[in-house]
Length: 211
Ligand SMILES: Cc1cc2nc3c(=O)[nH]c(=O)nc-3n(C[C@H](O)[C@H](O)[C@H](O)COP(=O)(O)O)c2cc1C
Image (cartoon, rainbow, N blue to C red; front, side):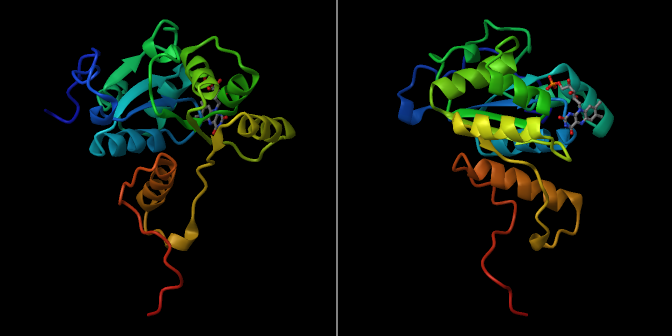
């Protein structure tokens, strides 16, 4: 299949297979913080790890994808197995009865952080995140803003107490990056580590290197 060929949004053929044989399922949401390439590279990594992805893109995420990258929205949608409108509160992922391992919001704006923290489920991103928290599944928020206000910090603390993991995509200079791509691969790799998925696309720290 061509890399960007759109896949139909239908139930996967293994939906009724015993759990042990089913593909792992993860929800990925993009919001309007800068760093849309992080979400794109996360989708690419999940695809190469054979994880079934369920994608939601906010209106402002669409704007940042167009502004910051060479991807079209349909290119990005084609990287996922299932794509939902942010307004579709009847989507399977709006219910806890639809089983997934968890959800990544990457990048995550402080607006979406605030919505999730306050339990406002008026769009599919905040509703799906609310479901993940109530079902005690894994929720990772790659919150991106700087500097941070008291409101941002309080929301991050409160959502962490509710079970989410805050993963600010801050660069690790100890990897001695030779490109922005190195930094992106490192962040994406560390985000997916939180789901016990190994992208094998970055070097892990093994102590001081001796030359
Ligand atoms: C180019 C651009 C960059 C932005 N960067 C950030 C950012 O890094 N963090 C953030 O919280 N909001 C950022 N915003 C503002 C959000 O897009 C805005 O608050 C929006 O309402 C977020 O909505 P959403 O969470 O539904 O996508 C940015 C907006 C634009 C246009």
